[in-house]
Length: 55
Image (cartoon, rainbow, N blue to C red):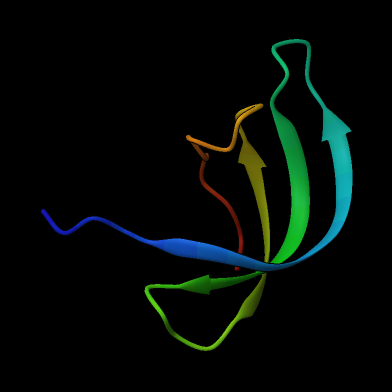
């Protein structure tokens, strides 16, 4: 399975923070080197993991 790569081009806002430290954020993200898109997604505190989101 191919690894998905992403780069956060611009951090826009943190929408909420959960008790576990995960944050729901809106960012401008480039997925697999393609043109950046606005994205709402949950991230772990160190951004090593991310949940399902809306692009």
